Image: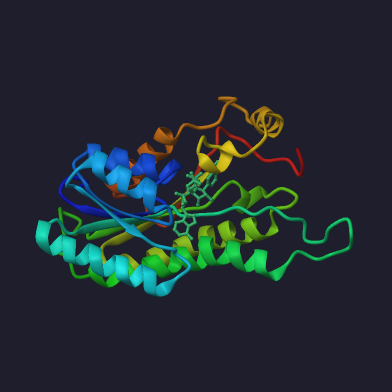
Length: 262
Ligand SMILES: NC(=O)c1ccc[n+]([C@@H]2O[C@H](COP(=O)([O-])OP(=O)(O)OC[C@H]3O[C@@H](n4cnc5c(N)ncnc54)[C@H](O)[C@@H]3O)[C@@H](O)[C@H]2O)c1
């Protein structure tokens, strides 16, 4: 799947891994439609990227907000003539909490709902609403490709730590839906790939204390450091360009297997 002169919808595109992806795809000639809660960052990014970028203020747990952003992107595509080539569903949140705490209080259902609504429902809803505009594009190349869906799981999908039940459930679900999504979409020439990063530099991980970060890095095999957002972005780029990547989960983790606790 070509990147240049295609439009990519990137949720969570105003920070961290989504932003690095936006920069990378844009540098390779893509048009980027960024969906994020953070409107200030979004408009700064669009002014720095110029006319091949658009920003939509969206909470991905709000179906109507996604619908408005998709409609805006489709209208933009009509103006530019650069068809949608893919979705990168990067918006995500973490809200740690033990399933039962020291005071014998169970994890609040509101914190479980919050994480599942953004990371799982928001991912599926964005994909669901973008697809009708991808299945109808002109197929490209010898394989007749129409586009790529890229989702973001986490090491927590496989070895979630204490306090990560909701986050691990959301990311495990994203990992699990990758294959059936690829199967549903194969007849349209649309692929589905999930990337599962371990610890990467981003706003999300800036909040981790240096002590916790150090102990996470210690659990890594090689290299013993947090990944750079650009290393995530290049994996997105390869997932778009490499037609054999489909229905799979790419662990991007320096061979790290997270221990139960730090
Ligand atoms: N950084 C890591 O170590 C790491 C590891 C594994 C997985 N991930 C996953 O990577 C993805 C990107 O995270 P990041 O590390 O770049 O974090 P980040 O906080 O830097 O970026 C996340 C972006 O998503 C946006 N966002 C959050 N909730 C939203 C919502 N409801 N609607 C729209 N936008 C919303 C935020 O405003 C932010 O711009 C997330 O899904 C995260 O779970 C990150």
